Image 1 (cartoon, rainbow, N blue to C red):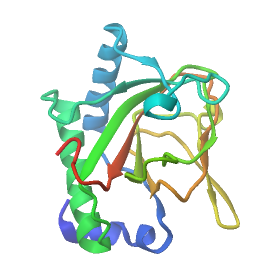
Image 2: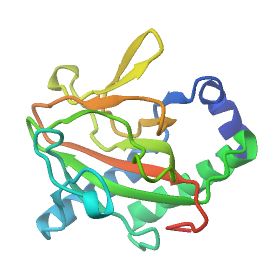
Image 3: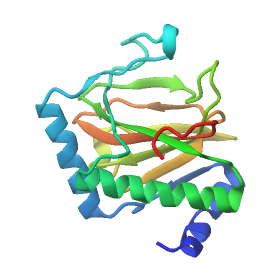
Image 4: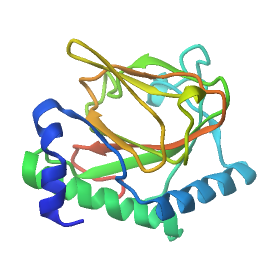
Length: 204
Protein backbone atom coordinates (compact mmCIF):
# COMPACT_ATOMS: atom_id res chain seq x y z
CA UNK A 1 0.00 0.00 0.00
CA UNK A 2 1.35 3.41 -0.93
CA UNK A 3 1.89 6.22 1.56
CA UNK A 4 -0.97 8.16 -0.05
CA UNK A 5 -3.34 5.22 0.46
CA UNK A 6 -2.24 4.88 4.06
CA UNK A 7 -2.83 8.57 4.61
CA UNK A 8 -6.37 8.41 3.22
CA UNK A 9 -7.11 5.27 5.20
CA UNK A 10 -6.06 6.94 8.46
CA UNK A 11 -8.19 10.08 8.14
CA UNK A 12 -10.78 8.90 10.74
CA UNK A 13 -7.99 8.07 13.18
CA UNK A 14 -6.51 11.54 12.76
CA UNK A 15 -9.85 13.01 13.85
CA UNK A 16 -10.81 10.64 16.68
CA UNK A 17 -7.73 8.71 17.83
CA UNK A 18 -9.61 5.45 17.13
CA UNK A 19 -10.25 3.44 13.98
CA UNK A 20 -11.24 -0.05 12.84
CA UNK A 21 -9.52 -1.15 9.62
CA UNK A 22 -11.08 -4.30 8.07
CA UNK A 23 -8.79 -6.07 5.61
CA UNK A 24 -5.66 -4.34 6.89
CA UNK A 25 -3.68 -7.56 6.40
CA UNK A 26 -4.52 -9.97 3.61
CA UNK A 27 -5.88 -13.45 4.19
CA UNK A 28 -2.73 -15.31 3.11
CA UNK A 29 -0.54 -13.50 5.65
CA UNK A 30 -3.17 -14.01 8.37
CA UNK A 31 -3.16 -17.75 7.65
CA UNK A 32 0.64 -17.85 7.95
CA UNK A 33 0.53 -15.93 11.23
CA UNK A 34 -2.14 -18.22 12.62
CA UNK A 35 -0.10 -21.28 11.64
CA UNK A 36 2.96 -19.79 13.36
CA UNK A 37 0.80 -19.11 16.41
CA UNK A 38 -0.39 -22.73 16.47
CA UNK A 39 3.19 -23.97 16.13
CA UNK A 40 4.13 -21.95 19.21
CA UNK A 41 1.22 -23.49 21.09
CA UNK A 42 2.43 -26.98 20.18
CA UNK A 43 5.95 -26.07 21.32
CA UNK A 44 4.73 -24.76 24.67
CA UNK A 45 5.63 -21.20 23.78
CA UNK A 46 2.68 -19.49 25.50
CA UNK A 47 2.30 -18.43 29.12
CA UNK A 48 -0.45 -16.78 31.18
CA UNK A 49 -0.60 -13.04 30.58
CA UNK A 50 0.40 -10.68 33.39
CA UNK A 51 -0.65 -7.18 34.40
CA UNK A 52 1.65 -4.35 35.45
CA UNK A 53 5.36 -4.09 34.72
CA UNK A 54 8.78 -4.53 36.31
CA UNK A 55 8.49 -5.12 40.09
CA UNK A 56 4.72 -4.70 40.00
CA UNK A 57 4.19 -7.37 37.36
CA UNK A 58 1.79 -10.10 38.47
CA UNK A 59 -0.75 -12.64 37.26
CA UNK A 60 -4.37 -11.95 38.11
CA UNK A 61 -6.91 -14.32 36.57
CA UNK A 62 -9.74 -12.10 37.82
CA UNK A 63 -8.53 -9.32 35.49
CA UNK A 64 -7.38 -11.34 32.49
CA UNK A 65 -7.18 -15.02 31.52
CA UNK A 66 -5.51 -15.00 28.10
CA UNK A 67 -2.19 -16.57 27.08
CA UNK A 68 0.59 -14.68 25.32
CA UNK A 69 3.83 -15.23 23.43
CA UNK A 70 6.03 -12.23 22.60
CA UNK A 71 7.18 -11.78 19.01
CA UNK A 72 10.69 -11.09 17.78
CA UNK A 73 10.90 -8.19 15.34
CA UNK A 74 13.87 -9.88 13.66
CA UNK A 75 11.96 -13.13 12.98
CA UNK A 76 12.50 -14.74 9.59
CA UNK A 77 9.23 -16.68 9.76
CA UNK A 78 7.22 -15.50 6.74
CA UNK A 79 4.05 -14.46 8.54
CA UNK A 80 5.81 -12.50 11.25
CA UNK A 81 8.23 -10.92 8.79
CA UNK A 82 5.30 -9.70 6.66
CA UNK A 83 3.47 -8.46 9.76
CA UNK A 84 6.43 -6.41 11.01
CA UNK A 85 7.01 -4.97 7.55
CA UNK A 86 3.39 -3.84 7.40
CA UNK A 87 3.50 -2.35 10.88
CA UNK A 88 6.69 -0.48 10.08
CA UNK A 89 4.97 1.07 7.04
CA UNK A 90 2.08 2.10 9.29
CA UNK A 91 4.46 3.58 11.88
CA UNK A 92 6.23 5.62 9.22
CA UNK A 93 2.96 6.99 7.84
CA UNK A 94 1.57 7.87 11.27
CA UNK A 95 4.78 9.75 12.04
CA UNK A 96 4.70 11.50 8.67
CA UNK A 97 1.08 12.58 8.81
CA UNK A 98 0.38 12.94 12.55
CA UNK A 99 3.82 13.77 14.01
CA UNK A 100 3.55 11.28 16.86
CA UNK A 101 7.29 10.58 17.05
CA UNK A 102 6.86 6.80 17.29
CA UNK A 103 10.25 5.08 17.35
CA UNK A 104 9.64 1.55 18.59
CA UNK A 105 7.23 -1.34 18.53
CA UNK A 106 6.46 -4.40 20.63
CA UNK A 107 3.88 -7.12 20.06
CA UNK A 108 2.71 -10.52 21.21
CA UNK A 109 0.42 -13.27 20.06
CA UNK A 110 -2.63 -13.53 22.32
CA UNK A 111 -4.80 -16.61 22.65
CA UNK A 112 -8.11 -16.47 24.48
CA UNK A 113 -9.31 -20.02 25.18
CA UNK A 114 -13.10 -20.46 25.36
CA UNK A 115 -14.37 -18.41 28.28
CA UNK A 116 -11.22 -16.28 28.62
CA UNK A 117 -11.50 -12.51 28.95
CA UNK A 118 -9.69 -9.27 29.74
CA UNK A 119 -11.53 -6.84 32.00
CA UNK A 120 -11.86 -3.10 31.35
CA UNK A 121 -8.43 -1.42 31.21
CA UNK A 122 -6.15 1.14 29.58
CA UNK A 123 -3.00 0.06 27.72
CA UNK A 124 -0.56 2.59 29.16
CA UNK A 125 1.26 1.81 32.40
CA UNK A 126 0.97 4.31 35.23
CA UNK A 127 4.75 4.61 35.58
CA UNK A 128 5.75 4.37 31.92
CA UNK A 129 4.25 6.45 29.12
CA UNK A 130 6.11 4.80 26.23
CA UNK A 131 3.08 2.98 24.84
CA UNK A 132 1.39 5.52 22.59
CA UNK A 133 -0.65 3.69 19.97
CA UNK A 134 -2.32 0.27 20.34
CA UNK A 135 -2.76 -1.94 17.27
CA UNK A 136 -4.79 -5.17 17.62
CA UNK A 137 -4.81 -7.54 14.63
CA UNK A 138 -7.18 -10.51 14.45
CA UNK A 139 -6.32 -13.92 12.97
CA UNK A 140 -9.67 -15.78 13.09
CA UNK A 141 -11.18 -16.38 9.61
CA UNK A 142 -14.96 -16.56 9.33
CA UNK A 143 -15.60 -15.63 12.96
CA UNK A 144 -19.30 -16.27 13.77
CA UNK A 145 -21.22 -13.29 15.14
CA UNK A 146 -22.64 -15.42 17.95
CA UNK A 147 -19.24 -16.70 19.14
CA UNK A 148 -18.54 -13.68 21.38
CA UNK A 149 -14.95 -12.51 21.86
CA UNK A 150 -15.62 -8.94 20.77
CA UNK A 151 -13.35 -6.07 21.71
CA UNK A 152 -15.46 -3.37 23.38
CA UNK A 153 -13.98 0.11 23.22
CA UNK A 154 -15.46 3.04 25.12
CA UNK A 155 -15.87 6.15 22.99
CA UNK A 156 -17.34 9.54 23.79
CA UNK A 157 -21.07 9.03 24.13
CA UNK A 158 -21.06 5.24 23.93
CA UNK A 159 -19.02 2.20 22.98
CA UNK A 160 -18.22 0.12 19.92
CA UNK A 161 -17.85 -3.67 19.66
CA UNK A 162 -15.36 -5.08 17.15
CA UNK A 163 -15.69 -8.62 15.82
CA UNK A 164 -12.34 -10.50 15.89
CA UNK A 165 -12.34 -11.29 12.17
CA UNK A 166 -9.05 -12.18 10.45
CA UNK A 167 -7.27 -9.21 8.87
CA UNK A 168 -9.07 -6.53 10.88
CA UNK A 169 -6.84 -4.04 12.70
CA UNK A 170 -8.07 -1.89 15.58
CA UNK A 171 -5.97 1.22 16.13
CA UNK A 172 -6.36 3.56 19.10
CA UNK A 173 -4.44 5.86 21.44
CA UNK A 174 -3.20 3.73 24.31
CA UNK A 175 -3.79 6.23 27.12
CA UNK A 176 -7.24 7.42 26.07
CA UNK A 177 -9.58 4.52 25.36
CA UNK A 178 -10.81 2.09 28.00
CA UNK A 179 -11.54 -1.31 26.51
CA UNK A 180 -12.19 -4.96 27.34
CA UNK A 181 -12.24 -8.36 25.64
CA UNK A 182 -15.44 -10.36 26.08
CA UNK A 183 -15.43 -14.15 26.57
CA UNK A 184 -15.80 -16.31 23.45
CA UNK A 185 -17.13 -19.78 22.85
CA UNK A 186 -14.14 -20.81 20.72
CA UNK A 187 -10.39 -20.08 20.74
CA UNK A 188 -9.67 -16.48 19.73
CA UNK A 189 -6.28 -15.60 18.19
CA UNK A 190 -4.82 -12.13 17.72
CA UNK A 191 -1.66 -10.04 17.81
CA UNK A 192 -1.60 -7.08 20.17
CA UNK A 193 1.03 -4.49 19.35
CA UNK A 194 2.06 -1.14 20.75
CA UNK A 195 3.86 1.65 18.96
CA UNK A 196 6.25 3.28 21.40
CA UNK A 197 7.58 6.77 21.91
CA UNK A 198 10.85 6.58 23.81
CA UNK A 199 14.58 7.20 23.44
CA UNK A 200 15.40 3.70 22.22
CA UNK A 201 13.29 1.61 19.86
CA UNK A 202 12.70 -1.99 20.87
CA UNK A 203 12.29 -3.71 17.52
CA UNK A 204 13.69 -1.34 14.92
